[in-house]
Length: 315
Image (tube, rainbow, N blue to C red; front, top):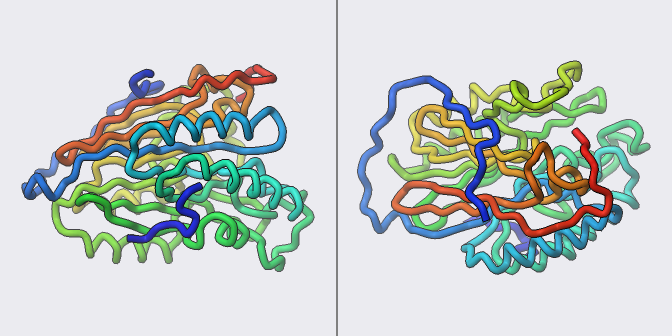
């Protein structure tokens, strides 16, 4: 089992824009012994955006203490640990990563990490960081948070895959993409999974989302796709012959569930809500509790009572 070297760091999930997406013939997976598919809970939390401002560290502390009391087998962090590493100098980046490292220890269960766009260091030119810097891009994240940005592990008969959807570009921006080397790795990883094994995938930027169709003022002028994974069809094609029960996603800070063929694409609201300014489009600060029973998934969204010191709407 692959585990991060930093092990320790009420309401039903609302389908804010629940959508049923047509497509494909329903697949029948071979039956497996029930004892092979363990029953357990884990927590998926995402977009902490920890920073010295806006009482964010206190908010994370409250949230992580609640996660610690959920009786979960482990937790998966869905990305955007810090705010921010993209456009800042080394001192600021280390400051916010220090804050996250200290606060995550409250969780007290094994913790798996997913890289988010704000976790990549110095990519924007305003950071003043040169591409030749030894910590440029994902290197600082790999050193401070997780030595691997994509990997898999197994737990009680379930197979878990964590993907890296963040790719810095040569012109000092970033795009949401699963790169070719990772696609080849994923294909090889899935070949080693026994037929019918239930699987969960975690990724920061959504593979499937309806967000752009209902959220106000979505920016469509960006050079690169940063709202959903650009080559999601290629990734989903690799899932076709496997029992991918759900894909857990972050990035948009809202709760959304989309069913595509046999897979639920579950986007979770953010720990930071509206970047620590209160609820985001009506979705409060929180995290998702995932319950796996007999090869099936159910989820609920838990809030934790954070009160913003500067409540305001921010898209």
